[in-house]
Image 1 (cartoon, helix red, strand yellow):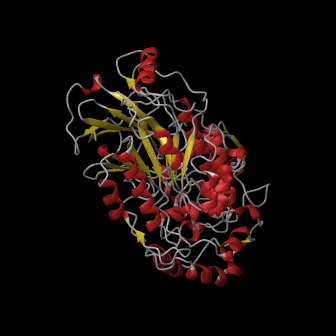
Image 2 (image 1 turned 135 degrees about the horizontal axis):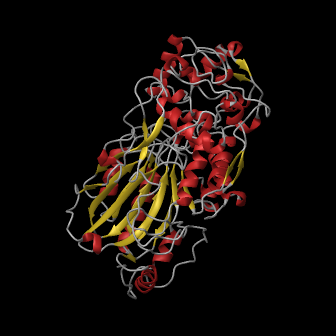
Image 3 (image 1 turned 60 degrees about the vertical axis):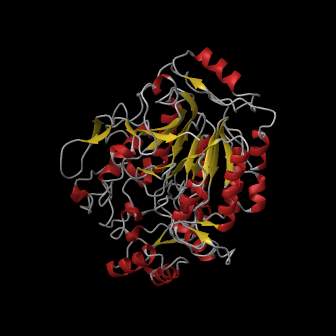
Length: 581
């Protein structure tokens, strides 16, 4: 059960307040094998003085036993037939795998467990304004991420994911109440003010019209008449229709129709990603050129193959972090660009604007106010923080975007020293278990380009961050995204859990549960979930739910899309054993 306090114990609440933590949930302390009443009694006795009252939520009743319904433990979308455009249907479940890389799996632990934390991770939602002149679809031949046939439906897809989480009765492995949702970055796609508004409304609830420019019609590559892109409402035999993509009359009008999000019924927290901080996800911010392009009336939709290859190579290799090559390209081809309706709402947002938007009471939803950020973070221009996961668990959210540009990440020296200080202070005090959240993975933190605002500050990559986390035995897990792929790596004393995106197939999120096995080990359970949209689609159903289902099916069929993003069974539904410190 939870630890008993003594008079000499370091005050947990003072520590959390000093480090900027915000109360997310009461301690769980749920012993298995007893009813809800006994669980509540056990939690109250064991957790010491009552924590601050959580934000009230409208959640389903928690079941007495774990469950599979609504998760990939019960079934997952899978293709039917072979060749060409493939329809999706109900597929077999993904089983749970026990991984004992870091600790022994002792028998009988199922009957001894106590739940310490239970929450959901979203990552890489990429809510995208597909009509933005800053979107670089003309690089499609070079990279599948430049344009996806499903991306006009990203808002409907994200809202359906919110609906799925709202319907979950608790943690699938433990039945413990879900305490919050953490989104680990790339919530937006173009670093656009409009996309940020869509994201915050999706999470907190409200109406979203996923349209920009002309309020009456769509103005993007899917009505361009160019064979490079799927033209859903034209008879044109475009590149995607040759692969079996359907003609869908009314698709574009439906894609920009107003969507209603119920908002999460749980508190939610936000971690920043490179697409949230950098124009295009890769260019150093603050350049007025990007604002001029994004808000202007010209949209480049096609580019000679040789030029596209050259520009993409520079981006991929990190040789153009300030976008000098892109500026020259857009300027040189301005006359060939399509005329579109200008829209000031497409402007890239600054770090301060990102923070202010999170602190806006209109977006508080179920809380907490600021979603991890406070007015102090705004004053300090800081995007990393700590928060209370539960009475036994501390959460740390990092900012791994390099302000110098490029899509891979790093952390500055000041942030790394702050992280070490938080971890050391925790070890001197209550010795809480620690979960770290970031956007980038250890493998994708190799960008040590100087921060223009702090040119003399050293930047640190993934191996150095792993070394710091491994030096502190109370760190249990590091949870991230960015790679759009499910991958779980054992790092000696903790687990790194990377989760697939919600824009590329298989469009997943994770439920994460931490338990004490009372045998010298902890278990970190992860269970993947899909959106609430049905696996089967109906081309005649262009309702909000029908579009969310189509969003998933189009993502599966996207040409050049990777087929390995679901990971292996060891990266999906797992029980991860770790030694208890």
